[in-house]
Length: 104
Image (cartoon, rainbow, N blue to C red; front, side, top):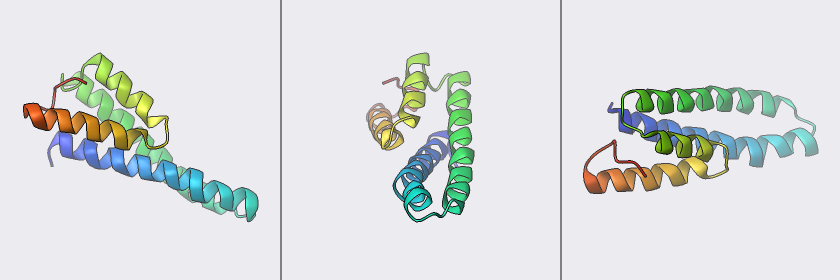
């Protein structure tokens, strides 16, 4: 799998896990008294978040991301829907230029 494809999949998985945590697991914990939902989803989100950050650092180290692009990718991970938006914008631009290292 290419580095851009791997980053794309991890970005989407991380974004989805964040939304599941916020929109499903947290309400189950506080409104239905099911704290196990947050433990399970929170653990998977944590693992995916770490993988996302590692892939950002890997892309930065390999010169595929500029420092600005890496910073934007990290900031996107902190916002709901952020990884989806970042992946779409970045990969649409990279596709247009047929390069993975095209900065935003």
